[in-house]
Length: 494
Image 1 (cartoon, rainbow, N blue to C red):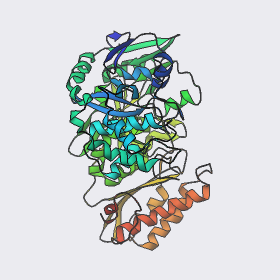
Image 2: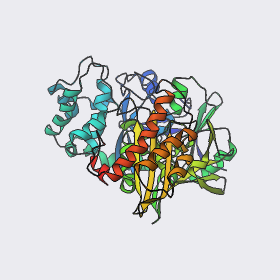
Image 3: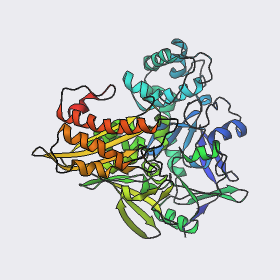
Image 4: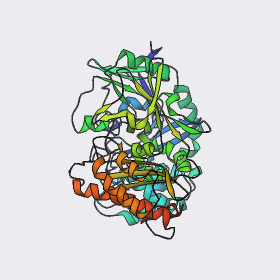
């Protein structure tokens, strides 16, 4: 049994406590704000987590401290707010006739044109203001990458991001002053009970422990397991799918931890990409750069490493990099656990090696050998917030001029993320030379038969996949070559 149950969701809307019992399991935060609370400052644009017009800020406890995260209200399910604080653009209203520094900065720098996207920009800037002091221009661009402005007003908005720090220190604003009080209130809301709410025979469960999650998955083997809903949310908003039973992993403390075992990082399946980025980047700098391009800030604050794996998408950017690193999965069913190489989890398009009632519990990412060279490349139509046409990740070890070990993994080239076994055979034991690389490039034709879709043609994908091997060769043999147009070019010389 999953243990004690609680029949309501509770969270703070600003400073006001909300307790909700009768709720559609997949009602979005956006729909609730606009249709129930009538807080219409938050806008609906794309309804798929791309445009940022719906951006709100969620405050949650992280190690006992309050942390503010910009998220997309259009694809976040309302019951997932349990134990959190929800802030919208209405909460930044003027006090004593003075606008909040974020709002005043946008006024001072003329950072709004048609105005539809402005509430989302305000909330993204507000999250940045609460969490960081004096970010660099590059960091500001990252924070705003998930907000689209059709009026092309980015220059004044970026100027406003710098201006807001001139108008007052973040530590002095009214939200920071109340930070400890809000943290205490959220801590008081935390409990060990499994949240169980629903409507019309449909159910939403949010367990607090991995044991409770395991019991629920056995009891409801056909349930949809939801972490960040950055994919599942679109099933609801775009495909109008009705999910009878939802099990949410975001309250499971055991699954939100990253443990350094000495030889590897053990990453809980519910760890978000925002939380995993820095630990992964310390081991594999290219993975840090890759994560920076997974969705945008709002998506990385919700999307999880485990969810990106468990949904089995052939174009998920995380799995190729983790496969190249030699990652393993820990799967759990009841009290039983099994471990398998990540590449073996993916069977075919839409099929994974996961039994009924089983879930991804942890991802084990081994630390690199000091002699390893690791590279990850994402090819897409635009740099930020775009789906890959091809993603390639490679781990290479050269000893005495010959390839002693190699792992080549690709996304976007098949129905699943997949290793290029024929290309690996063409390289293993061979001299690390341009001739060997060309042989491996040719071998890729035996590894993959890519599809043509709106992102790229089959021929383009095949050529790009091969050219990425040449890029790997150039970066590892010609330290002075400039191969990175953006990002950390020092990676090319590592």
